[in-house]
Image (tube, rainbow, N blue to C red; front, side, top):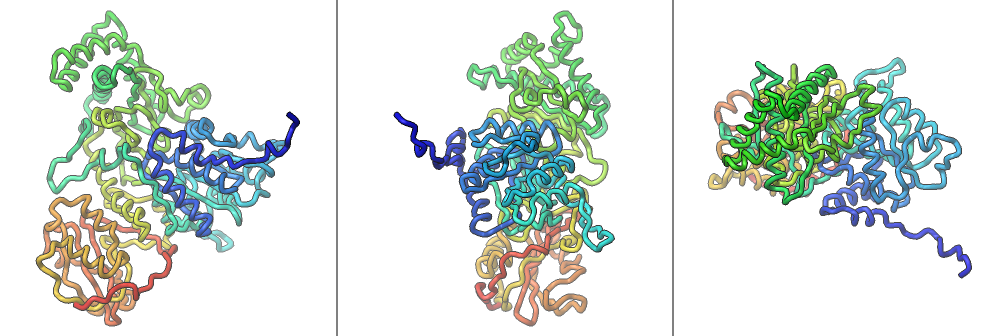
Amino acid sequence: MPFNPSDYNEVNLNRYKVFLDSLDHPTVSIEKTVDDAVSNIIKKNAKSFVIYGEPQSGKTSMMIALTSKLLDENFRFIVILVQDNLALEEQNRERFQFSTLNPTPKRLEDILPKDVNIEDREIIVFCKKNSQNLLRLIKRTDHIKNKIIIDDEADYASPNSKINRIGEKGDVEKTKINERIYDLIGKDGIYIGVTATPARLDLNNTFENENHRWVYFKPHAAYKGQDFFFPIASDGGKFSINYDLVTLKDQAHDPAKELRDSIFRFMVNATFLNLYKNQNIIKNYIMLIHTSVKMENHAGDRRVTEETLSELAKRNSKKRIKYLEKIFDYALKKTNNDNKAKEITQFIAKNSDKYAIGVMNSSKHNKIDFDLKKFTITPSALFTISIGGNTISRGLTFNNLISMFFTRGVKTIMQQDTYIQRARMFGPRPDIESENFELTITDTLYHQWFSCFMLHRLSYLSAINNLHQVWVEGSRTRAVAPSSVDKSNVRIDKGEISFEKVRYKQQQEMNVSESKKQILLSLREKLGNNFIPKHVIDFINAISVNKEDDIAIHKDGKIERWADADHKDISRARGIFGNFDYEKFPLAKHHFKIIYNEKGFARMFYNFRHGKVSFLRNTRNKIDPIDLNQFAQISH
């Protein structure tokens, strides 16, 4: 048969479908996210927006799917920005490379030689977020038009922490990495930030991101996140926790013993799963130890871990007998069965030498000859122990993780975005492994972490509803680093927040037979979501059991009663609520009050009384103008 050039014409590769078909789990959430993101670019001409989802919720698979779809839509040059961390860069790049992607993603070094053609072909290139790499990438690709920049962990390093500084020329100063990414995007590039903690990007106005175009990546059904690990209970009630929570005193009398006992419990849980739950399949499990950012402390954790496991492996050691007795006690407590406790202890005694200890930090040793995969994605030993600090605090995925020893305390104020990212136990955990997961943590740190996630819920519900992104912080938790907050465009409401101004007529007396929640729903139905956003009602449903006592709906009032208020805008710098209001409803957490003006407009004011709470909102990006006539005018 003669050669026919037409047989080799380019065909539709349909890379997006090929990748989705390669996945072994439902893809509905990925498809929705990718469709929304591509619609932003093609139909809405968005140039800078964020895709956000919870920590370890499958964002890497989503990014691969998005990259595939963008290639199918004829975008030819895609840059994947990753943290300046070799371990993270390798983990993410290998996930891309071992996927069905065509073309195969490349490292920056692969495209730098001048003899590599990058103009007339499709390119996916990984670049770490350091100034030198970014500069080399800019110089190499400056002539490439319509680049797509996908920034993984976008709130890390990319925002401008000098946003409030004015330079000699009167321009806002920029950090070097922020400036380089600006240059990389250029005039015709498109920026897509991907992160689980987007507050910093919004409050910083990073790359003029369009917060009304944000896309939410919903976790799949197998995901275990904040609702599982930090469940909310009613006032004074017991938390309904479905995993093993071990709390320690803040000042340990014997830190080595606490760590050693946690290792024993990890081995018991791993063995319990392998003997009784894994259907004759032996799985290697991971324990994560996170006590400090200092590398010398990592070395100390390693010494305790190595001493513990090596003594267990010695056949004639007196400590071995002592340790096995302790293991038997933990196994008996777990199973309440003498035979199972004996079987678990015998299994550990027989396999005690099947362990691996990996320290993940920024030392040269880890950069040169450390096999990251064996301590994260594919644990190589029956009992795998991963130890580290900041390197394991963001981005890394840990498969088969069933134990976390977390005692890294907070000396001052907990920064929400940092500590949300440290929840490495979040992820697609099977129910049976989640139920046998153990979190060992100091009592104070757990409650601070719990409070951090409780405030994060309101922020998250705000962002999910794509309206009024509001970032909530308390007296002991800060939404983001203050240096990153664009003070000229961010409004901070101390203790209370107001929603959109709408047309309004004083209404009749409220139906006293309705519940307070139903009154709020009725107001939302009549005056619209901009008057009282759904995410606020969702938040109340999530954290309040006794909603009647928790909610206070105050009598509405005129803004003109305050001489120091802005009567047209319906706002008051000193706030609307006072102690007299709170005294009327001493049990209430959620306070609502309608304030109207003589021009026929009104706002709903809301205060969530959980300690000292502030609400941060970016006023620079506005949602499409609201037609106030669309709302019904109710009589009062």
